[in-house]
Image 1 (cartoon, rainbow, N blue to C red):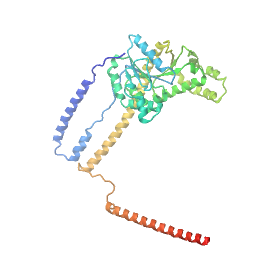
Image 2: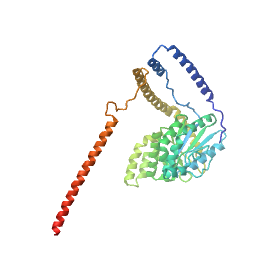
Image 3: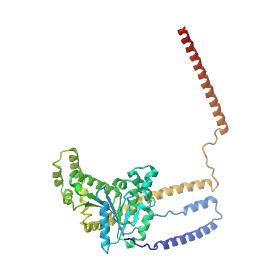
Image 4: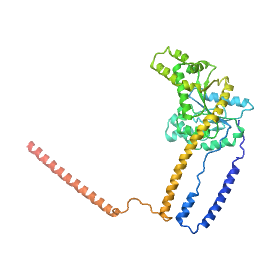
Length: 406
């Protein structure tokens, strides 16, 4: 599975950029000599106008396909990952790369090319920040995401030699799905490679219609949160077949019949949700697999390839539109700041500008300190007078007490 690193193919473009920068410097010096007669303000304005804002986007690659394996704890994600790794090793025409994003896992049944545990120590993070298990996982993932551009660059260097990149996520599904670090990792992958989400479902537990609907709601939320193609993966089909789930998704009446035996509020609520998710089921790919026996793995990779093609046709266009809109807003913000800077420098005509602190034409600090001292003395005198009055009142009360005693 491990691929030997090769020299980066981007070294030549970097050298060309450096040469272009030297040419630009030479041209800039020539322009400065031509503008000796101009004022300082005009020179500064022209230099600001010559600045160009470049795009920081990376080159998109059609290979490898990123597979984000997401699922609740106990659904068999890690075992399923092991089965996928073994399948790719057995196939000579499949070249894979494995990435582990679970910092709390003790042992992995497969070898990971990139492992978060090599970078972030989960238990040390818990001790240093005084966190619990979930907080430690979230913080570890946040720390790892700050350097995730290096992970992308490593995969880019091996892109021509890989077909798939398998990503194992933490068992606490909400930590990766709804956290900022999970969004950063997902968007970093999706903006560089075709990315597909594989949502793993525990098939034996989903035989209950209410539990099945909970899994479908979570799959729907992941689809709209990540905006990526999703493959619904029913695991453990060697224990319970997944045909009942396929029937419930395709036949509304069959799902209603399964709910007839339950008259609780959750059952009626589930019956209403099944109508809402009818459109969601139509455009969803689902496969049944067994991480133990290896059943359905071929069908899983076929669904992944179909989803990758769908990503290139549909999701990629939407992603480009969102990235272009983000770059447009960023360019407008930068141009606005540059225009404001240009106006300020034209107004100052290149002279030194003294920033105002807001204390001009106000009372000098010495006088202010003197007034403050006088106020403190007046307050002290008032407190002293009040204390004298209190003493007089106390003496009067003592006299009354003495008189009554006599």
